[in-house]
Length: 187
Image 1 (spheres, rainbow, N blue to C red):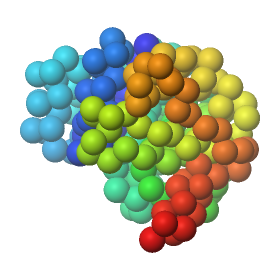
Image 2: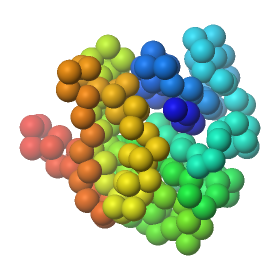
Image 3: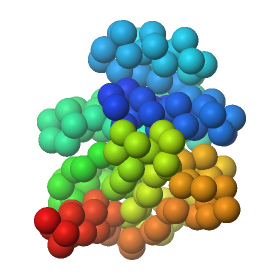
């Protein structure tokens, strides 16, 4: 399976590493050339532009975004949407405000691009312990992603014995809303 990873900070870089350990092909992009060089030395296909990232991905393409919430995420989604095609998938794996994800979904929907928000829990320990994905978005987008990505959740799972760590939270960008509410409940 192939995925484009945008953002190679502590979590994005480790998510890419875990996918590669699971035998998946990662096309990696970050604004920090040193991060791209490092992940490339570990087996990813490093690229220096979003144009290169999209060009290297087989259709239908999936780009997973792990950049800081706010303007950085907004910019990446807008730039990817300019380059991607009908049937491609953009996934916001960061901690964006859920209403921003609802708005972004509406922005890319007319182009036929699937948009999924996937609150990702696991922190820097996820490389060894695995990740939990709380996914929100239209059921059709969920179906497209899970049909094309069966092995990905397994690669991110906490254990091979319990690979199903994904949780679809509903058709309206609720994945990150679930993470936000859970965090507030325990703080």
